[in-house]
Every structure is written in structure tokens, then in C-alpha cells.
Image (cartoon, rainbow, N blue to C red; front, side, top):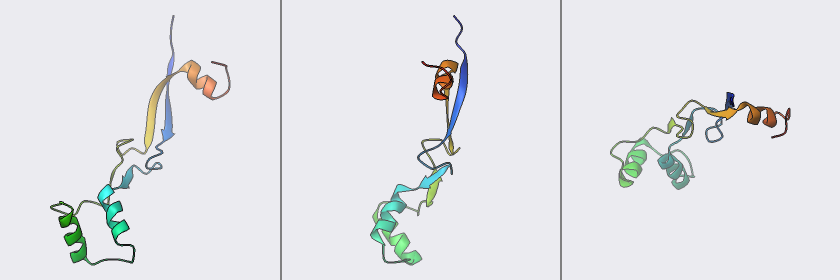
Length: 89
């Protein structure tokens, strides 16, 4: 028996195809500073108190898609045709 495969590709649901997500520490930072834009000294003081030696980047590569913005998976041709409604599985 021969099995044929195709590659399925979709936009990453975690980063919405951008390839980057907000660093979790920054999410917590903005939750702690809802009133406006703090100073650079406030930034340094807050991140230092959280155990960061330096301020991390606000965005980093998405772990779900490795920063590509796209999820790829190998599926059988039968699965692909069924997803398109062209055959019944």
C-alpha cells in the first residue's frame, strides 16, 4: 500500500501570523502600570524587582511557530481531501 502525504500550512493562532508575541514579563508590567507611561527609571526598578538583570525585549519569537508565523504539519492526502470536503474519510 502506498500512502501519499501533503504539507498543511496555517497561520499561527498564538501570534496571529506575526511570528512574535509579547514577553510575559511585559504583560505583567503593563498590568501593574495601567495609568500611563512610566519613566525609564520605573521600568528598570520594576524589572529589577522581578529578578531581571536587564530589561527583556517587549516582544520575542513565538514558541508555537518558532517565529515563522506559520504552523506546518504533514497530513495524508486522504485527510487533506476530507478537510476540503472532496472525499469522506
